[in-house]
Structure formats: C-alpha cells, structure tokens
Length: 500
Image 1 (cartoon, rainbow, N blue to C red):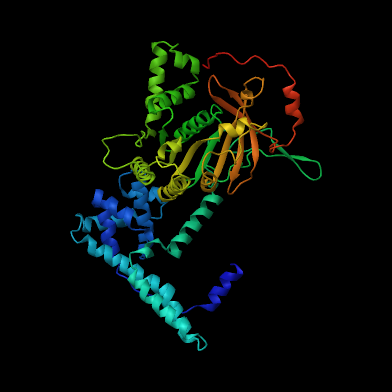
Image 2 (image 1 turned 30 degrees about the vertical axis):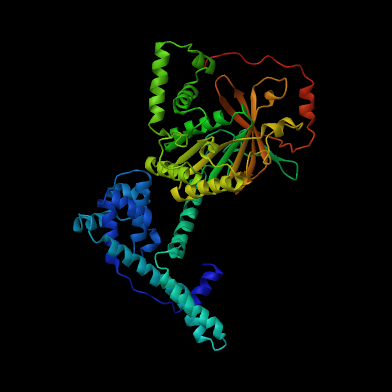
C-alpha cells in the first residue's frame, strides 16, 4: 500500500452516504435490452455514472459497447465485451421480470437523474458546506456562496451536471488502462513493419559505446488507439493514400471495422485499389485492364471479402439542391457521427477531411476539427484524417520534406492530432530510383518525435516494407549523404512487374 493509501485509511472520513432506489436502474437496464430503437436512445442519453448499485455501471457500459459494435444482446456476448465484469444472467432475470418497454419510462429516467443529483451534491457542495459550518473561522461570504451552490446543484439536475464525470467512473477507466498496459494490450498498431515497432536492424548506441537492439520496442505510443486522432499528410503524390490503404488492409485483417470516407477517389475505385494491393496486382495492369477473366474474378472476390469489414461513407456534403438543410460543418459532423455509430466502426478514415467542410473560414475549420476530435472520443473510434501539405510552400523552399508548418489551413490540424505521420518520396525531387519512401513522425503525444523511418517502396504495387530508422534531418540541416546522392546519375526507375 502507498503512503497516501495508508493516510486515507487512518483518516477514515465521515462521508455522507445517500441512499438511492436501485429499481429505477433495473427498469432502465431492462428497457435498454427490450426497447429496440427506444432502448438505443436510452443508451446514448444516459451515462454509466448515473448507476450506483453494484454491477449496474458495468452492465450499462457493456450494453453501450454492444450498441457501438452493433452486436445483439445475449449474456455471453455481454460478458465478453466487458471482460467478465457484467453479469449477463442477472440482466436476463431483469428482462424476464420486465419483458415490455415501460410506458412510464420518463419517470424512471427522471428518478435516476435525481438520484445522481442528490449523490453528487452530497459529494460536492453539501460536504463542503458542512465542512465550512464546522469551522468557526469560515468567512460568512464563503458560507453564503456554498449554500447557493447547493441550491444550484439541485436546480441543474439532469442539465449541465450530466457532463461532470463521476470519480468512480474515472477510476474504473484508470484501472482498465493499467490492466491493458500490464497485459501488453496498450499498443494499437497501424500495421506497418518498422512503423509500429523499431525494425530488426535498428540499434541504439549506449554511453559506453556498445549497441543494443531495439527490436520489439514500441515506436508508436499508443498508436491507432480508439478515441485518438491521427493526421496523415504529404504533398500530392507523396504516398499518403497508399500508406493509409495499407493500414486499412491490416486493420481489416486484424478484425477491426473500418468506415472509409474515400472522398477523393470514391468508394468503388478505392475498394478496387485495396483488393489490388492485397493481391499484389500491378497498378498499371489494373488501370489499363491488362488482366483476364480469372484475374477479374479473383479481384472481385477479394473486394467482396474486404467489403465485409470495410464500409464506405459516400460524400454526403455535395451540392444537392434537393437537400432541405443547407450544408454546414455542424450538419456534416452529425452525419459522420451517425454513420460511425451505425457501422460500429473501430476506425474512421477521412480522405480528404477538408471535403467535409463547406465552411472553410479559419474559425469554421477549427470548429470542424475540434468536432471530429470529440466524435473520436465519444464513439471510442480511432480517426484518421488524410490532409494535404501546402504545395506552394514546398516549392518555395530548398528542402521539400513535409513539415508541421506545411499543413494546409488552420493551426487546429496540429492541435487536435495525437499523431502526425508525414510521407515523403525523395524521387519526386531528385534524379534517383523511386525505390524508397520515408515516414516522418512529426507529433506523438505519448511517444518520441520527431523521428524518421525509411521503407522499401514499389510504386507499381504500392508496397511499403522493411521499415528502419534513419536520421531525422531538420529543416536547414546539411546531410552529407544526400549531397553525395545528388551527385550520382539518376538510375532507371522500376518497370512493371507482377507479384504472384
């Protein structure tokens, strides 16, 4: 036990214990299971910290997780999504006792909110008022302010108070984080060898001159974790769409549901590209139609397989004169959130996210970016925003590598991102073989940045393999290796090949 833990036991505070009616919580749990669309609305409207009876918060969070994943309720599935913390047999008993959606559900909802208001008031302003009353030195104005805060706590029941997080809920989440870290489940891969973890050839030199292998050490912390935002950026043709497609394939193979807003290439062409990348088909052959009936059948079968877990969100932001509502950033964000919820997406990819912004003023752009960040948190979905670098900015400077400052638009692109991955193809700017591509990690909230990883690259097949750490060259820094490469004659670029 820690020192602070012992001190808490020794103090043994005389805390207020407020009773509550568990029947109201039981009615809501049963209604959420049997209520269909009405039950889904309950799960969205009421947070788990409105439940105080033993086991009820875990059950409610489990039902919310089932809804997020679009899974049907049964006791075994409920136990599975909560790692055994929710008692499915208990829920079955509640459902048998109340098999119909109650007509007076609003009464029970109000009672649950009122119980929360009473308990939260006792924990906060009421406890503070009692403590101040016990202290003879408390200023009268302080007492009056505390008394007023007690009144406001009850006046706001079910209003702004619903956004104040219950300490017990926070502690449950803290324990879950520790459980995942200790079980080795706190890293969420992007799916590229050498990007998620240090590559096989990576070593680190210690102070005594010895080298240690970095194989298996996480590079991206925590990576593509639900609730976080990744910005993938590059100059046009720099590899951002191909790199994201590779990530989507790996997420699909890992069983994660992906919602893909392919707003630059459209859904059919993007799905066709995913199938070609997965099978190792030449892009030139694909676009030129250089394949026979068997090849076509194989491509279509792979497309159908991928489409089972990768769903596409069409561009609902176009200039449709039939639309009754005028397009706005707020409306489009609502559409995106609804789609993520309907699909039960674990990952949402927007390529390009600026297509979702009919309002492009700096303040409007910031609003949209903060909005998508909130959606990622609320839906427990990892969000990938594919974004351009400013072309003119790169053309006007000697160093063409992507930078944080080169992100188009508002500064919120950098602020909302938990991770920024910037791709760079040196052959676009030098007379060298187009056989390597670089990923620059320009931001990581919890990991090392800046850093650079070089990959073997075949543009014909969109393959990005064998990642290894290279020196991250800062803007204006002279790299003698690059100078030597510049002096070499350009090599012949790789021609069309097939991978079978």
